[in-house]
Image 1 (cartoon, rainbow, N blue to C red):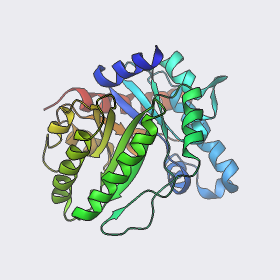
Image 2: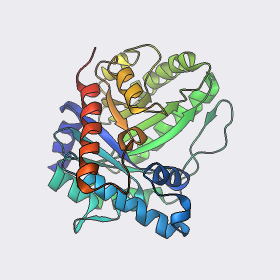
Image 3: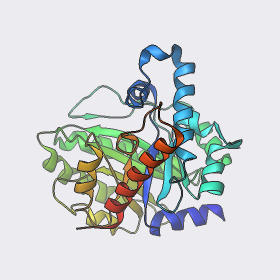
Image 4: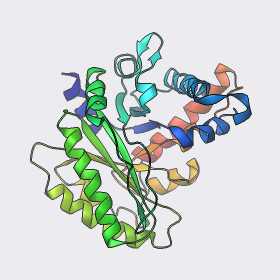
Amino acid sequence: MAQAQMLTQMAEKQGFIAALDQSGGSTPGALKQYGIPETAYQGDVEMYRLMHEMRVRIMTAPAFTGDKVIGAILFERTMDGDAEGMPVPSYLWEKRGVVPFLKMDKGLAEEKDGVCLMKPIPDLDPLLARAVKLNVFGTKMRSTISSASPTGIAAVVAQQFELAAQIGNHGLIPIVEPEVSIKSTTKAEAEALLRDALSKALDALPADRKVMLKLTIPSVPDFYLPLMKHDRVVRVVALSGGYSRDEASKLLADNHGMIASFSRALAEGLQHGMSDTQFDDTLARSVDEIYQASTRKN
């Protein structure tokens, strides 16, 4: 029952997805942005504890509800953690009305042929089974594209959809994320190749399978509209990709039907030393700005 309600929310409700899934190498940078330097903690255990506290502070803030934040992508440790005495996925859905997702990739391999494929993901099936037991709705996995390489982009899409099939076998909805770098000198050309490759992969999906797509905001506004209309696609969401929140929001507002799934841009301006009132007010402004860009288009 909850899964059906979550699917309806992800397909139809106005709002955006919060990406609370920094992991491994990106965690120190996220903590530094939050005002906690690397000298303030020792080792991974303390680092991840501080990161979890930051995420819980965000998730429990008054503005972080399904009224505007319709979904949240979680790091594995966050999925396994608690918020206000409840498992995080249950807390998000039952108390906040926010659909929980799991970031399930293990990072990127070395760049080859203009792309970075995902590293191998050992014990993926047990991880997915655990996510199902925790009432997680779907997953997210990220690859990167730095140049308009037809063979490289084909390899990225093939790997993404091979894993999407495995994820779908567990009844989860995968978010396919082939990120085109905003620094790429062939960004528009890469996006054209990517759109074609994604369209073919979507056409090949079984009739009972659906995916979501998480894509870089395109160089040409509304470039991904054909993908949004595909009957295998639940939603197309945008990553901030290194843009500031203001810049990402302005670009997103030019893309009809595309909603945000921001990470660093969502947390921009939040500081560890803020009072609860300051923190909540800053987050509320961020949520409002991203919500407006996701729902009110130019």
